[in-house]
Length: 319
Length: 308
Image (tube, rainbow over all chains, first blue to last red; front, top):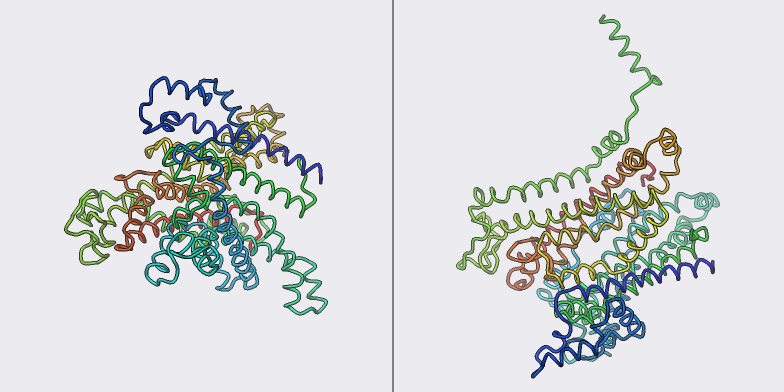
């Protein structure tokens, strides 16, 4: 087991190096001169100044050396200053991390609660109309464009019914400590973000519960004369819930990526929205910091997934 | 003569006598025909594709409204049956929503199918090669795949699209060339196990060359579930294109796609909800059909699958 963990950790390193090369290349290959962008609007900017800046930032060095420089700094959390805000890109990103994490955690809780309930319900009522509706929902959850559903929900609940706010973190004049106000703002984006995971969980749990229910120990439990309720909740469910843990890594991946679009729809001031707006403005340091950061999160969630698999199922070994 | 024919018929009908065995495909077709949901999804998808293909004809002879036609006197017309061109309402400069939806369908469906075709070609070729030759080639392919999968998909596409602002054809190429990892992983895994089977060893012993073994012996065994992946892939690409267009970096106006019509509608949704609803419903139904077809095909084609 320990050998597996160490190997799996080592496997993550080349992946991260590959991602860092892509991230570096994106900024270097894209049109537009970073020095010109950085000094845009500066008065009396001469060619001499330009050359000195190019030298100061090491842009006259060969590309591989520039890459090594960039990675060395990036490892220390230094992605350079934003072209627009003239502040540390990574620091600005971490300031927005809280909002994204809160959204993701809320979505995760909704996914597990709703997804697991639907999946188990479908399995227990197998073949009935409840099962059919839940199965169609399981596919529909994947097929619905999340940003569109977000807009529809805004139209219905914020504009027409006026039950919930349409966007942002807080109401005007409200403070962060107003939990109710915060929850009202969180509900719609978290639900929309949770949708894919709800679909995934309901499908996995349905298959898994049916699988477990057809196994010998369940028949034995029935044969012992246990009540249906004890069999389902005490024996079957306990085993069917294993994939909730193992699917977590994959689910986290959908949350990391999905958050960008949802944050944009609901004007949620998180990492995704920040990176997206930096990409529009060609603010490379922030874009690079954002891509590296979310990618590292993703690689870590895959790592977590593989480790939980190995933990739950000891047969898994790295070849 | 007549009696022999009758005897032959009787012999064939006796139970236990040799009966032509059903192939995988005819077996699958037999199952599919009984799967009403999948057939329904397939029919609906075909209707959408035909409507989109017939967009120029329909706009001229049914709706009498050209695709780029504007009418500033009839902006934000509500959906109505009185004037067929206003069937789904009009937008902020009086363009017919239904006509634009048809043309947008050409773009959205076109991007989905063509990019998926590129995905399949790359994915199958790379997956077969990596799985068959293993060793260094496989290590290289695995490295590229884990790296690409390590970047959240929407970030990768968004940043490429935002920095280079591609047209529709480049967008198809980008999605096509970056979205093949799932198909490759599947083909590679299958090839891994298939190449150890006896019939491949047999092919080797009679002197079949690598290329022949890969394409004539391994590929046909991988192919059935490729159709499942392809259906799901097309749906996923249509969703991706619509999300990119929604963020302003997919297909750019005035070329309509369901995604950018949605973005445009979003600016006016307080006044004209129909501009938001109709393109979204089209995306949703199309992707839903494709996913249902994928599910149905999987049930029909995978004999190992337990039918729950």
